[in-house]
Length: 473
Image 1: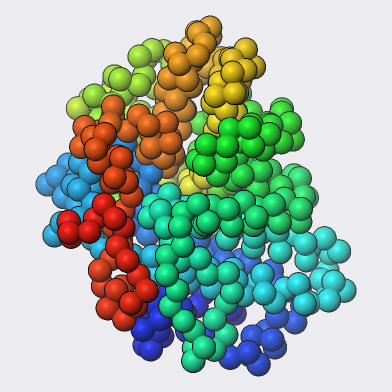
Image 2: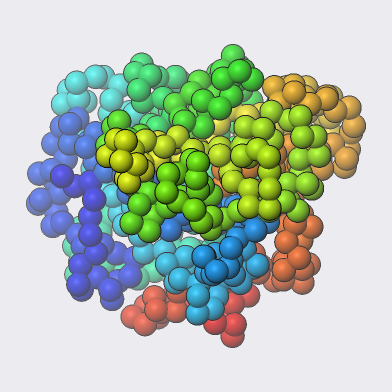
């Protein structure tokens, strides 16, 4: 199986290059639709590994936003990160290092390079070939977008390494160029993917046309193209107009594969893809009674943040997301679907909540943000109040800058602990309001970006450090 590749001993000199297969092997492998589907499954597995490694989806997207009052005695590294300290003895360099992302990109680039040459009659379904190609372009666009929001400029590698002797280190490309490539790739994804799912078991955990438009909406919002964002988001909302889960079933959204899901990472114990939580891998947001025999809590909720954001405690999200009553050691129970692999002994807990990347409520609020930016406030209010209505809070009637602030806060409430808050704050220029360690001077210098691991510079003279971090490591 070509699914998961590993770094070779010699590859450290080509730090974004993986152990390659020779061209004869690679051509022999990509023979038919089964090979192509196995390869794309391997790409999803690699993406899952990247996003779950050291809770990185939430470390990058949540803890710096102020959502948690991390216990420094139990998790000193992430306590420091939450304070804006992206460097230091206790901050693992794994957060600075992008090698695993290029392992994923090698897999994706192989698919994009090889699958188009497989004859369509080698696939069991006439649409399968297009789907695999579309998914590969979606995954490449998503991966580079994700990386660029973390590091800004990153090496843009669009071809697989088939021969280690020909592999070359390449310099970081400007973020603007990376994001333009993301938009090109996402257009290829939109052109090849289809709406909906023939198999509901694949809902949200394999990308479809709506996943691609959701990604495009986020990329365009990030680049300030709100006209493009609004149009892409509208595509998702139109296709899924009846898919917003109602208030009674709201908690089921976070188990995964709900009608509201747009793109998720599969985490399901019954499919042998649950996350083992013992052996030091405890979910940092839960303890007893949600995880038996666990009495400590690494990431308690920040009550300061909660009071700032959830001003109405009758909000269904306040009651659904947080263990009640909410104390100084408050737990996030949004993702608390725990199964015990050892039955009643309760010694081997497994998490079975999907990692939610995009869902319909997110895209509705993103379109509301775009409409407000475009001066179409009445349309924005309809979307905003659709989400507020489900949450059981009063409709909002303001306009202009006040509406913009209200939409941001609605996103912070709705998407708590879903990996969006930090990027929303950076995009809207509001991060200093939530984390005092990011003053205007630091923001102006790009200090919200992460440094690059100096260890990667050893054998790669094309790399340069993120400007803000030069002289600070």
